[in-house]
Amino acid sequence: MNGPVLEAIGLTKRFGALVVAQQISLTLAPGARRALIGPNGAGKTTFVAMLSGALRPDGGTVRLAGEDVTGMAPHRRARRGLARTFQVNSQFGPLTVLENVFLAVSEHAGFGGRMLRPAASHRALIEQAEALIAKLDLGAERHLPVSAISYGKQRVVEIALALAARPKVLLLDEPAAGIPSAEAARVFDVLEKLPVEMAILMIEHDMAIVRRFAAEVTVLVGGVVLMSGTPSEVLSSPDVRRVYLGRAEPQAGQGAVHAGA
Amino acid sequence: MGRDRSPLLAPPRVGPLQALPWLLIAAAYFAFPSYLSFGSGILIMALFALSLDLALGYAGILTLGHAVFYGTGAYAAGLIALAGWREPITGVLMSGGLSAILAVIVGILVLHLRGLPQIMTTLALGVIFYEVANKLTSVTGGDDGLQGIRLDPVFGVFDWTVYGHTAYLYTAAWLLLMFLVAWRLTGSPFGLALQGIRINPLRMQMIGAPIAHRLMKVFVISGFMAGVAGALSAQTTKFVGLEVYSLNLSAAVLVMLVLGGLGRLYGAFVGTAVYMIVHHIAAIADPYNWMFVIGVLLIGVVLLARGGLLGVADRALRFVRRWP
Image (cartoon, rainbow over all chains, first blue to last red; front, side):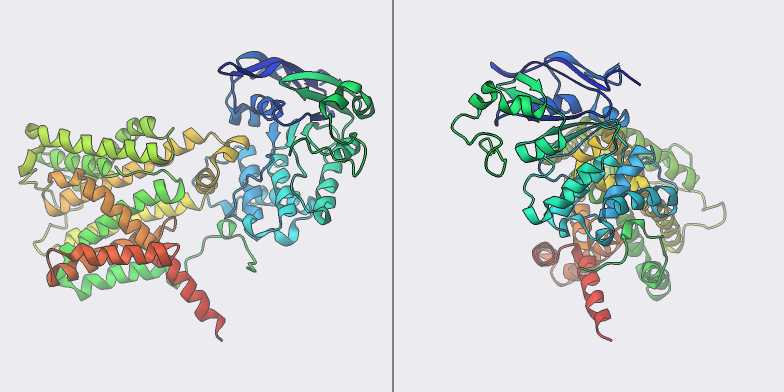
């Protein structure tokens, strides 16, 4: 397919008199690597929630692989190839890493409603889960409850749950948030190895990560798209600098702009 | 925390521990011939608690009104027998089926709720059912209940004896059958998905699970089992009274399940047996204050022993196994 795999057209969301997203448009082609940046309260989370289906927009359209999914339930979008991760780890804590990934693999394969055969007898699903776990280098932890492994590894499981569905579009909400720097390399490794044809939209505050992984950057301010462009275009724009007024210049220091975070 | 397998993905196995409850049920038949009616009562409540475990322990549906399914099954079985259909097995299946249909309707009302609103709505429904049954004397017999229930022998062979031999074995057979269904179900991908929904419904949606549909499915199965339990109580005691719809019953079955341990199937067995036996003994000692003993036991379990009595047993067993 050559057309955009994800299109947001004029998405608008109001909470009472407060407009948190106004006419936001954005498209992702297959293989896109786009970062979504902006200060806190810019509407990034709202925008992603409208894409994933958790929030219903008051105006505008979301198209997934050409199909209008604006009013579609989240689980149906997921089945059509839209996956997301959460900024705060959102997994199945008491279950093991393997059980976590199995859940996602099983739902993707449409087996989540099967009740006649033991889960253990679904060898193909387990092998698929094991393969993904090995690829993400979580083999040593696969039989541990997710709640018992390190935060950095939990971040990797967070991504694994999304990847298990072999999505066309992946929405990453601050994938490296809160990871101690010693473990950050693990997550960067995973991000670098994501399938090239997958379209990725990443919410990120850390400009070092944006420079490293994003080919395009969209800046959201006050619920409106301020500008889009390559990382260097965006980061050198006076408008963008004004938004981060009073802070270090985006590319200075360790490269982090923690906008109020 | 070293573990070498993921328990939910390990092949199901039947060891001595899994067989123990059934050996005890069989042994009790021979050891306590004069307590068989009491024994049948325990088995029926164990089945009721098992049905609640599917909804609450696995899927996380918070209900304080599960007696609506038990009560509907009981009245249905009683009315079916009184209407002249005396074959017991089909009577149970029809009664369970009616409770399952009721579960669809109740499910539409409560399954989209979570937390306190879900508890309050199920509780209110329980109260409404009780009051309706109370007023509808022409159907339910009101305070007098349904009396004079008569049934054909089981399989046309085993007559219902005064001492309750048939009733006990009949109840035990239903419990075994329903347990096997629950065991199979909870070990399946569906069972695992239910746990996922309980732990993190939002994430389950995001990985593509239609959670409303899944919850409805397990609620209907749970409602069916609760209806079967109610029907068995009607058939074995030959009586249905208003208390089958009582809030007390909904609360008691919840206490039994929590006492034994949520989300482990056998917790329903252990909790029910302990509750009812302690009740029986304590009520002989002091007919008015027996609930005190249960209360202390429950507080002890909730405060000190996560996972109920079976959780305690688990840890004790692990401790013992570490000593060579």
